[in-house]
Image (tube, rainbow, N blue to C red):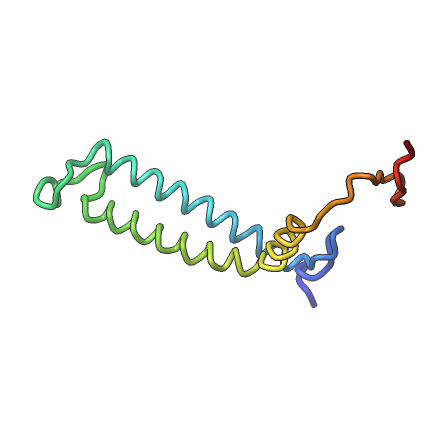
Length: 119
C-alpha cells in the first residue's frame, strides 16, 4: 500500500524523497517568480512611498496587496530554502569534503581501476 511513493531510484534514493525534493523545488521556483513579478510591478508601476498610491488599484490589487504577496512569498522562500538545505545536507557535506581532498595527479582511471601513469 505505497501509492507509488515507495521505491528506489538509480542512485538508491527513495522515490518518496525524490518526489519531496521535486515538489519543494517546484514550489521554490513558483515562489521565485511570484517575488520577482511582484517586485517588478512594485518597482516599475507603483509609486514609492507610503502615502502615494497606497489604496490605488494596480492590475486589480492595491499597493498593500502587492506588498503582502511579495513579502509572504519571500518569507516562504526563506523557509523552503532552509528545508531544501536540510534535505541536501549529506550531499553538501560529502561534496565539501571532496573539495578538501588532495588528488593524486599521477593516476589514471580506466574501467573502474586506478593505475599509476607510466613515463
